[in-house]
Amino acid sequence: DSLRVSQITESPVKGEFDFEHLKKINEYLFQDLYEWAGQLRKCEMSKSDIFCLYSNLEYFANSIFSKLSSWGKNEIFFFRILFPFFC
Image 1 (cartoon, rainbow, N blue to C red):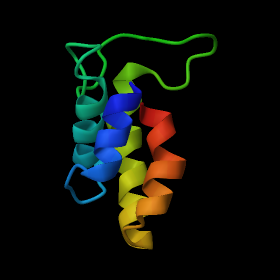
Image 2 (spheres, rainbow, N blue to C red; image 1 turned 135 degrees about the vertical axis):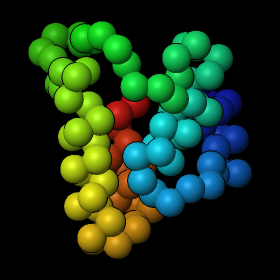
Image 3 (cartoon, rainbow, N blue to C red; image 1 turned 180 degrees about the horizontal axis):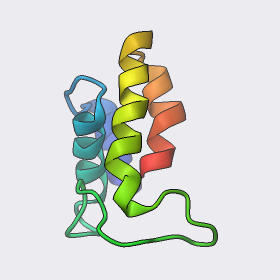
Image 4 (tube, rainbow, N blue to C red; image 1 turned 45 degrees about the vertical axis):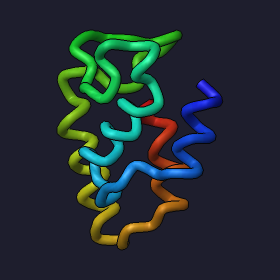
């Protein structure tokens, strides 16, 4: 919801720009909509093609964030590139 987005812009969720941080952001943004906000999904969900099987989410996320950490922590990259894939 747009209120949560404006709140998180004013007061960002603290973290290390890793997978746990992304889950905390997801939880903050979607806590009013989904009881499972911030948790890995446990079933397949898609609007059309499946982006990633739920059984592979943690593996792929850890792989992506491992590469991200080798590139350095970059807030712009995190929010503009990675965040949309996981939220």
